[in-house]
Image 1 (cartoon, rainbow, N blue to C red):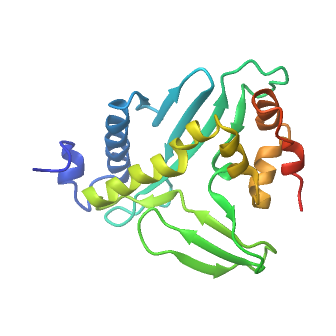
Image 2: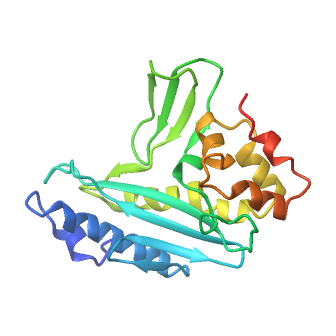
Length: 219
């Protein structure tokens, strides 16, 4: 039995427009998550789920650098919002996006970067423009020639790197896991000093015993 009933994913060729393949992949992801209670928007592809505390919106983008017959980019971009009445709300409850999730502190060795792929081998390189070592979860992948195994890896990435945080962040342990030993990029994304994130007031409201501003101080 075929792994999908989406004809585009089963029958496309090197002549199929990249946008049709990208849309078919998004439709397949949307179909999977609609069964789990998410709302799927097809016109600007994204899946959304919300409860009393969070709204999680996961958008899917592609690229102008797609190459017919070779490369169709899928970029996975999450955004977390608070649905709670936060007094300091300035940005519709926005907490963080991909920079708050996908870049982790690696080691004390300067300039070293490890990139973990959705599917494919890990990559390690030196970044001459940075003095920090990080691990990056690459939220892009090539979906040309997508098969069942790699589709499952996309779902695993969304589940284990994004959706899991909707439950973790309802606990003190989850807040500490996200903030302790954080990369500089994550600190920047969460501390709200640029006026965009409401993460700090969210934590103060729900976990008053956590000294969140101290946890987010740059070392």
